[in-house]
Image: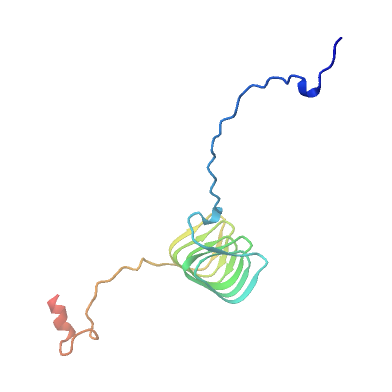
Length: 170
């Protein structure tokens, strides 16, 4: 007579002895997109309103409202599409997407993007104005500051020697 075997005695189906090889995956480096080639960038959101003087020593992305002055002499300023500025601006680079009412001084460059609205004068070495940007004001293109060779002046001349005598020595 046939007897059923206990569960443990029943043969298990043969499984192939295949193991997946271990392939190490290097961890991915995660960096914010905005900071790939920049150091620090401060961000002022669109709901922030500032009245007075705004200054700093890092790049700034400004999407809110500012009334007064903005001083970022050695850093870049980006005015976002929601930015509303009624201020005089002094920065190394100025990129405008929003609205500005005031004079801009960009020691290196100024960029007006297609959504920019600027009423005020620009003083810079390089400028870019995209098609569609609105600009009303004057542009003063500055030359790069060249290192000048020392020259003799009356104040710098040694005592008893006239400026004419120094000029003859040259």
